[in-house]
Length: 109
Image (cartoon, rainbow, N blue to C red; front, side):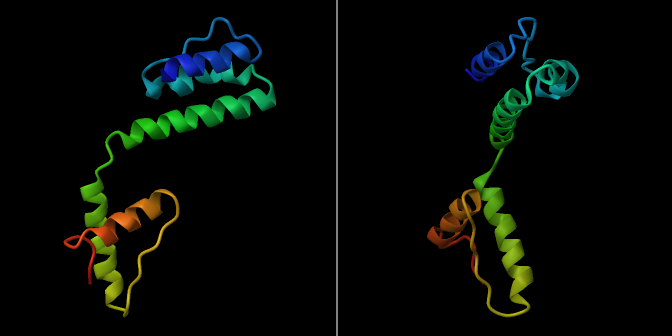
């Protein structure tokens, strides 16, 4: 699905008909960058934004909520030496803040 959407973006933009989006994201810089460089500035922004979101999606496939809560607890423990500690976040960080508040065994001082 991701590849089809990205292919659609590239085919609709400046017609790079010989562009193949590698499924291995580690090859994007070497194999995809030349095709993106042929696009107009506006199309480059659109394609780059999409590809960044796709890459972030791949990274978050390995994200562990439990590990994030453990890291938050470690940060709270370190900061607690200085006094009261609050946890806040925006967007993804906000979701982790809610998770920490909803889990009685999770983040606490």
